[in-house]
Image (cartoon, rainbow over all chains, first blue to last red; front, side, top):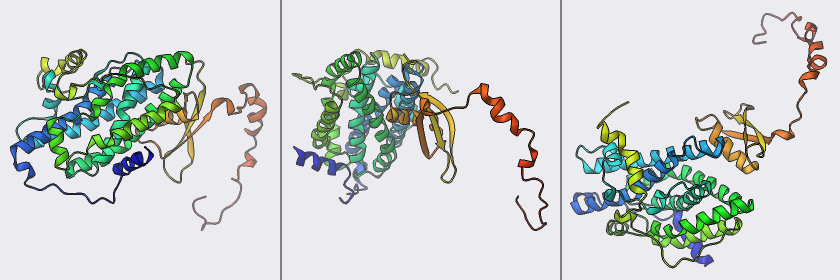
Length: 281
Length: 94
C-alpha cells in the first residue's frame, strides 16, 4: 500500500521525467482535435459548474469569513475555466467564443462530473463536495504539468497554487467539522455518506479521455485513483469520519447524463445570455 | 453563533522590509483557521507577503478612562521633541 502511494505521489510531481512533446501534426487530424476538445470540456466544465454552485453562496455563508473564502474559490474556478474555454475556442478556430461555450450549450453537452452539481444542502455538504473535488484537482493539475501539450502544461503550472490552497481550506474545515461538536460531526458524516458515491466518477474516462491519455496529453487518472483514496482516507482518520460502504458508484455526467439538479443550474446561469444574447455590461 | 467564535487581530506585512501593520480583525475557531481567514479576507487584493494573527484576548489594551493620566501630561512638554538643536547646514534629512 505504502509503496504504491509513494509511487503515485512521485508520479504527481516528478520533474525528472522528460516531457514528451506533442507531434505538431497531431492536431491536424480532425479526430484528434475533436477528442482533445471533448477531453478539455470534461475537465473545464467541472470548474464552471462548481464555480456556479459556490457563487450561489455569495452573501449566504455562515458568517463573513467563510462567505468571502467560498466566493474567492468560486472566482478561482471561473478563472480556471476561462483559460480552458479560451483554449477550446482557439482549437475550434471558428467564431466560437469562451462565452458561447460557457452559456449556450444544452444540458447533454456539458461534461462535468455529477459531484460538482450536487446542491449546497448545508455547510457540511459544501465543504465535503469541495474537499472531494480539491484533492482530485490538485492531484490532477500536478500530473497535468507533465502533459505533452504545451498550453495544458502552462495552465497546470498556473492553477496548482490556488488548487493547493483550496485543498488546505476544505481539508481544514472538514477536520474541524468532523472532530467538532456532536452536531457538526453528524451532519458532515451525513454529507460524506451522500456524496461518497460521486467520487469514483472523477476517475472515469470517456473515449476522448482514453485517446488523450494514449497521446500523453492527459494524465492517466486511474493511476492516481489509489493515491486519491489514500489521501482522503488519511484526512478522514484525522477528522474522525468514516468511509461509507457503498455497493455502487454513480456516474454519467462525463457522458452528458446529469442529475436532476443540472437543469436548474443551467437555467439560472444561462438566463441572461439566452434572454439578451451578446449583452455587454 | 458568531459571538461564541473567538476574535483575532490581523497584522499584514505589505512588502518585505516593511513592518507588519494592524489591518483588522476576524472570527476563527483556532490559529490555523484564523490564518486561512486572514488570507481570504485581507490579502485577496494582493495586499500582503506575510500575516500575523493573534487572538484579541491576548492583547492588553490601555483603558480609555486612563487616557487622561497616560497621555495628557505629554501634550505640553514640547522640550521632549528634539526640535531645539541647531543643525549644521551640511546635515540633511533630519
